[in-house]
Image 1 (cartoon, rainbow, N blue to C red):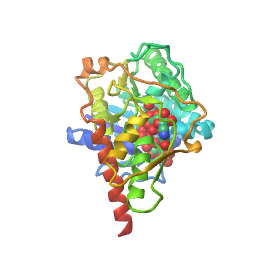
Image 2 (image 1 turned 180 degrees about the horizontal axis):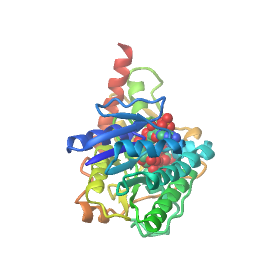
Image 3 (image 1 turned 90 degrees about the vertical axis):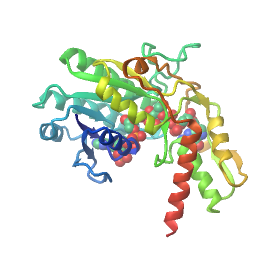
Length: 316
Ligand code: A2R
Ligand code: GDD
C-alpha cells in the first residue's frame, strides 16, 4: 500500500509515518515549505491553499490512501484566528477533494481527520456518543471540522469517492506542542524541576471532561482504517472513557519530583468550553478490531520524560 500523508510535519505526522512504514507501507509525506519532516521517506513541499499544486503531486505519487492531517488544529487558536482556521480546515479540504477529482488515479482512499469536538454541546445523557449523534459544535475549530466531515460525506455520495471521516478525540504523547493540556502541564513540571520557574503550575478549566488516547494508539487506528475501514463511514477514534482535567493534573503532579502549587490562569480559560465529550468506540472496534491499549498514566509519564530530556539537551 502507498500512503500520502498531507500535513506530516505536525505532531501526528511523524508517528503515522513510523506506524505505516513498520507495517510495510510505502510512505510519502508533505509539509509546508518552511517545515521539515525528520523521517526517512520522500517529502514533498505542499501548501493545501495552493490548489494547483495538489493534483500534480497526486499524479506523481499515485497513493492508495491519502491521510489528510493538515490543519489549524488548536481550539484555543481558533478563537484568536477564526479566518485562518476556516481557510485551512475548510477551503484547504475542498482543495484536496477537488484535486482528487482531477487526478489520474481515481480510486485513492482519503481519510479526513476530524475531531470529537464536532459533537459540541450535546444532549443530556447522550454520552457515550455514537457517530449518529447530531453535531452541535461549540467553537470555531469544531465548526470547521464538522464542515470538513460534511464535505467528505457530500463528495463521497455525489462523486462515489472512497472517503472515510474520522472524529479523533483528544490525543497526546511525547513531542506534542505545549499548547495542548497534557504537554502543557508536563512542560511546566519539567521546567519547575529544573528551577527554570517558580514551583507554581498554571492551569485552565479543570472540570472539563475529555477522552484521552495515546498518539501511538491513534496512528494504529488510522492505519487500520486505511486497510479495513468501510468507505463512506464516520469513525470515532478514542478510548471511550472521559476523565476530568483535574485527573490529568493530579496524575502529572504525581510524577513530579518536588511539590508544586496550582493556580488558575485566566489566560488559559476559554470563551466557552464544552463540559463533557466521550465517544462510543464500538464501530471502529467492530470494523477493525482496534481499541486503545496504552494507559493515560503511561502517556503522561512518557510526555513528562520527553520534556525533561528536551530541557536537558537544551543545556548541552
Ligand atoms: O500550522 P503549522 O505551521 O504548524 O503547520 C501545520 C500544517 N498546515 C498545513 N499544511 C499544508 N497546507 C497548509 N495550508 C497548512 N496549514 C497548516 O498541518 C502542521 O504541520 C500540520 C498539522 O499538524 P498539527 O497542528 O501538529 O496537528 P496534529 O496534532 O498532527 O493533528 C493532525 C490532525 C489535524 O487535522 C487535527 O485537527 C486533528 O488531527 O486532530
Ligand atoms: N491547553 C490547555 N492548557 N488546556 C487546558 C488547561 C491548560 O492549562 N487547563 C485546562 N485545560 C482544558 C481545556 O479548557 C480543554 O477543556 C481541555 O483541557 C483540553 O484542551 P486541549 O489539550 O487544548 O485540547 P482541545 O480539547 O482543545 O483540542 C484537542 O483535542 C481535539 C479532540 O477532542 C486538539 O488535539 C484538537 O486538534 C482535537 O481535535
